[in-house]
Length: 298
Image (cartoon, rainbow, N blue to C red):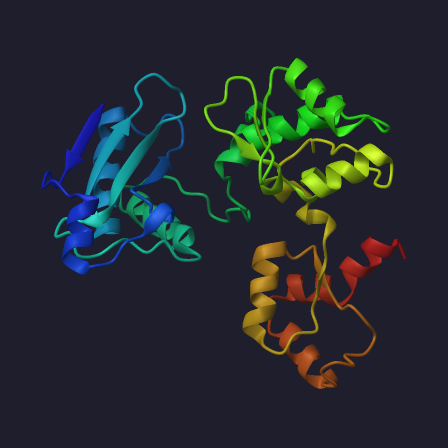
């Protein structure tokens, strides 16, 4: 089921004409929001109405949006896509840090108004970008494909001519000039060696061919980069309580602890103890001792 609002057509070029501002290649044309509900609590029609309410309040009725509610799933949810440019083509939506937190609270408020369930204590989420969401299914970029081809064909002791011949046997086109550029099979454009990673520049290739540089082919990690954050720890010796609270939010309360027995860089033992004591008792105790005991297996 689909619903939509604010049919006034808004164009990116109108925004640029009216404001004189351009977002360039980093421009965001639209934002995607997903609102989920507890199974069995809402019909698709009700989900659509609640999603409409959320979109109207979130955009303050100033942005075009379209809503779709699923009728073919046991996990009821809506998809809301709203235009980043307002209907007057004079302002862009600013997606700032913690916007998702504010959006979640607004969604919770609307659900409570409709006597629906909410997640009382949502776990900290790092979010998913497209690469992390696709995981192992993410197709390699053309530059990554070229780097892999180079790793496959290069051999110590090869001449540069033999290396280029090996690339052509692998289906690549090699263009030599001021800069060496290579087109891989299926690609539309050449890729210059100096646009690749440090191990694939023209100078580095010569070093690899002569044996002066040893490169270990990169391994593909088995999880999104965010999954490895649990292996990092943040020092609780910080100047401000806001910085300490941010460290807890971003890293989790299991990964913040005192980095030394005395804050030499700050020289303010009472201050760092007092700032940690401002946190909840459970988080305070983790930072003061529990996390250290677990990390060092004391």
